[in-house]
Length: 497
Length: 78
Image (cartoon, rainbow over all chains, first blue to last red; front, side, top):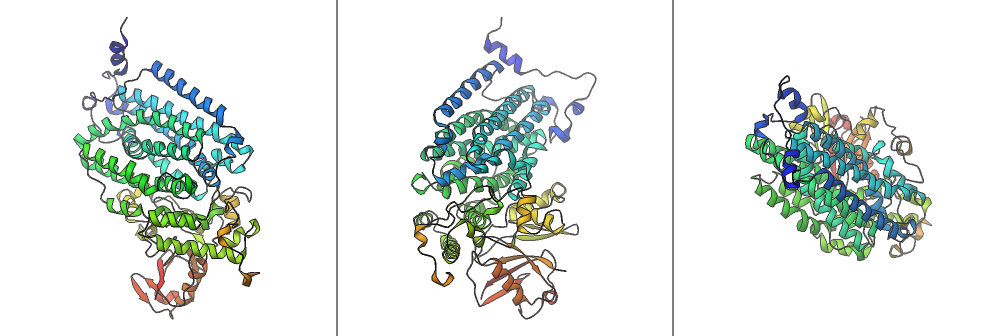
């Protein structure tokens, strides 16, 4: 009987020569990806984990048991109810955004498991699909039972099945990244850019945030997920290395495109969670500090290691560290009823902290929060006044990332209009327009929420848009977590009494 | 028939969809945007309307300015 070390290489490398079909028919370029290369170019594909199925199952079982043990110890509803209000809403954001996004990763990995160009790649992608299935099931299990005490957790299942504007943006992103992607682009974009560049380290940071927030259930969950990510993220490196030998410009394009697309989503999910939806005394760092320490340097080192250049818009990313997620949060607060979680206004102590962490543009952001605070002072606190401190005009969205036109600074919004094939498109930023121009056939027919309203597909009146199209209810739509009742706001203005 | 325009008010954090009438003056258009953004940006008496990188005469109408559906205009301090 072969030893494990002798058997595994045989079991992982099971390629053979086809005798009655051509290789191009078994692995069509449209679904395997480009450049199309004969298997001889892929036969040395290798990764470092070299796991057998039996080892995989044993290991995952142990990890699942550890998650369930923590859930039994500290995951009861009464434990969750003790969490600080801002963090509870960060949980609602992740509860909605994470599980089914992970499920799209199952689909992408299964594509690699069938159409990846080497059997070792296909084996590893099979494990990747099982990983992502686990990353779907665990948060669905842990978060959805919280619906019993807070109906906003219903969005754990519901989010991706709605036309809520943020769900439209997230679907646009994940449909392209994972669901409808060929194997090569999927593994470079997902494993190399998203996981190596962002989420592998993001989960380390999120676990740290959860620990500071005394949320040991979430801490254990993301730690458990991160250990899977660290393994299957390795698929991307050998795929990228092989394509680099034949078409380095294409790899550079994929990295530039996908770093930007990932940055847009990531900066919102993580930026808001760190700088606004974690209680001030529980924040271990600012989002910018987290990015500089965990993401930026290591990603540049990885690019250098593979002979890639930093993306052409890199200076813009560095500048956006100071402002983009602040623009989004203030905009989202003023349109909070369009979302499924609650918000808090940064009070004087938070604003002092934000000014210290983000001196470059904070004066302009502070003026916005002062104006919003003034509206609460005028109308007075209370749930009945929520919509009096809420936007009424239709917000606008980028035709590429589908996120609000909130890029640039309050002094200068960087939105830009493009006429293409007789239609007008608007983009939040130069990189979003650049991505569209490179592959207009991929994006041109998608309609953002504004275009859906203008075409009559979505209702124009805000209440109908919220309830009939975004599928929110007065009970579940986002509110100020304190309904404007903050001691620091002082008494209601007499003139409005 | 209202003309949907992308309006950007200096000081704001998001662009807004503004429905203009052909006969609205640019002064009226600027006021519509300021009203729509008043939750986040305090009103200013002196503003300029910028379209296609040019400061426009606020006495002319949307039609005279040549603003068309889904164009961008800016309202800035001044």
